[in-house]
Image (tube, rainbow, N blue to C red; front, side, top):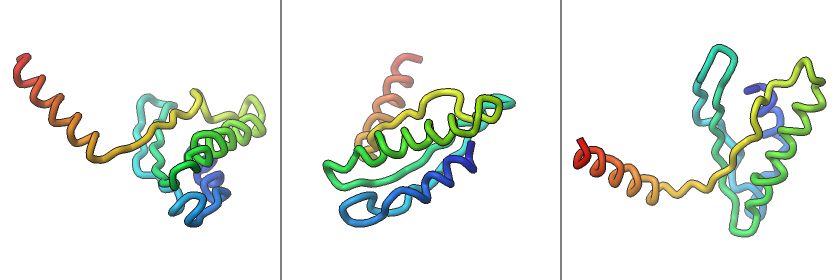
Length: 103
């Protein structure tokens, strides 16, 4: 899975009007013996989110399918979400406070 994703990452256009910097793998978690979660981060200017949401995700699915049924490595469709570091910090604080008051 990681090799497939990295290969496709190289095909994503980089520039001020596309993806600001090359996509990067920031985390790889093993969930089970043959199941991994690969977290990739990228930034786009407003209005260009489709490059990751659609183009990158569809490229992953297409390339995986092209490998043939016996060689497929993507178990579930990729999940795309917007990252907002300030909102995530705020959410983490709220969760910590809730856990303290519940327990």
